[in-house]
Image (cartoon, rainbow, N blue to C red; front, side):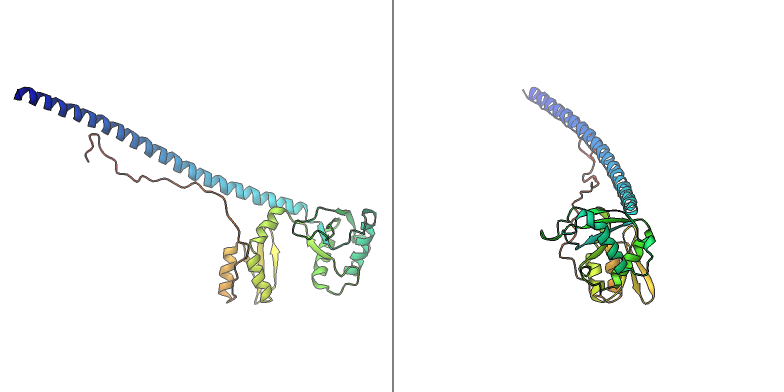
Length: 257
């Protein structure tokens, strides 16, 4: 009786060891596979990050090319809708002569001029902008510069504003600098925009180039200028893949270290 009981006990122990061995082998196989999956995922995460950088570089290049194709354009805001399409050319010609009287008439030429869709932020009663393509770039720059300094234009030109024609991506990226430019204007610090998107700040006879909002914050802190965060902070909803790491300790087959 005791021999039979011992035999059954030994057999049960042997079967249990066999089950544990099989379970250990399966666990080791799963751990190895999970390690391979983690390595493959991390390689993919690195590749995705590289692709994101390349995509950003391509988008910036495309943005620069689009802005260059618009560099002869001027956007006129505030010209009443009463000025019909047939009268736009004459109205702009008179505006050019009033704004920059020293420029000869033969350089104040434009290839086309027409109304464009109204930006969403303008009130409903505001007239649509007029987009004009100047034939000579230096004439366009002279008009833009004159519009910045001349504040004594007679009616009906005293309510007209001139803007550069920029791509939507450029305008979006410039809005990220709004808190920086607000602080600069508040402290009467001159600045201008560079290409593709950078701030050129004049400080003590030196031009400081700012390429990111973070650089702008550091510069303001260095100059002792208070920084007021934007009331509309940029929301970065882009999800970046995160890397995996092994949070277990591998076991040898059989379940023992």
